[in-house]
Length: 76
Image (cartoon, rainbow, N blue to C red; front, side, top):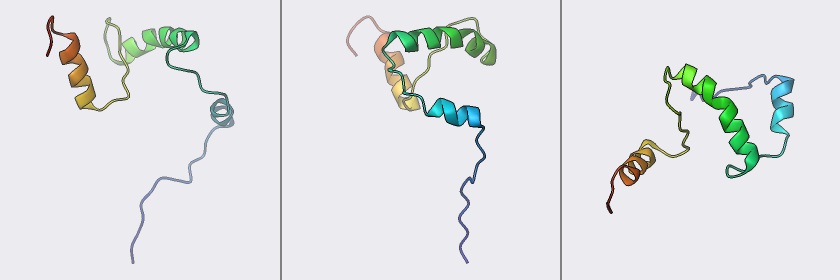
């Protein structure tokens, strides 16, 4: 007999469901800029840093490429 171990059903708080029903905001707009600025102090607390925290939806390889491309003065 095979067993399938997947999460769920998961109870979701009604406030979360309501928030998820709102239109998404673009990552290049003023709304996102404001949200990200409000999140920075808490992100710094979580990661125990005073530096700016960057968020990326890429894999580790994507972050490695970003670091290389932005950390050199010439073409890579």
